[in-house]
Amino acid sequence: MPKQAPRRNTDTRRRRLHPVAADWEWQLSAACRGADSSLFFASAGETRRDRFARESTAKALCARCPVRLQCQRHAVAVGEPYGLWG
Image (cartoon, rainbow, N blue to C red; front, side, top):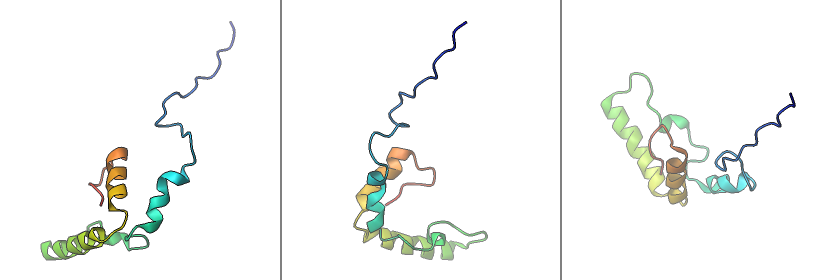
């Protein structure tokens, strides 16, 4: 019995046809670049007041971001499990 050739991946979502860096270059201009990730994720035992303050700060940062639309599009395209970015 002859050996079968390995299956080729024809799913273009998994096989990149161009440099991956081009897909992420917009992140270099993000307002949140270098920000503490705790700004976007709740800590254990966070109070409502603290949550409101944290979320308000995060939203203000996103509101002034020059790549907000790219960020939103990326979150939708990849099915971001932690909410909609931007």
